[in-house]
Image (cartoon, rainbow, N blue to C red; front, top):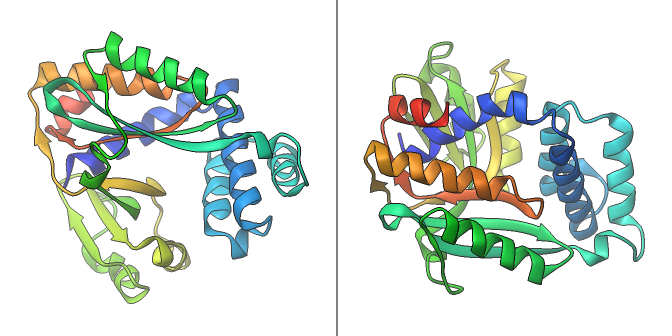
Length: 249
């Protein structure tokens, strides 16, 4: 299993605490607004919105907040129209490639803050196209391998998943974005609980890193994720799960 999935699973566990922060609610609301603006306000017909709403519910975001964000996104003009999605590319310690997804109403502010986070933590912001080719956007679902077997996940393949991989701790179910909702729905109907389920950029190759580099990368990623304008950070590094657990502590 890739370092991507191990880190995704660890981040999900940490998010139980992180999601209680008010700043997290504002990020979730922004993602809902943009998804509703771009694809309509019906989650059943808008996979991006359905995914954003699901994340908000997992973070215990109040129903009224979710509905208000959808209304803002579908309303003419206003706050949602000022928000744009921007993809930043850069390098971290050890030459690791990073993709930073931002949702911002001020591109200059976002660019300055992201550049500063990179330079302060041993990385550098790159030019557009410098690392994006190293990632593909996929549906990615992580399932606890201590609770389920691969046979339990076969419904995902039947629903359109393209691959299931595993290590001793977790299964990773990968699909094309167009099949993501169907795959997740099939697992839900079969009673499979998921550690995480998202549309995310996945690295096509991995860069092995030692513990010191992993610690520096985690600091950089967490610094970026703490920025108000940053929605998600993706990296192509690989390290043993026990190392990631230690440096994420």
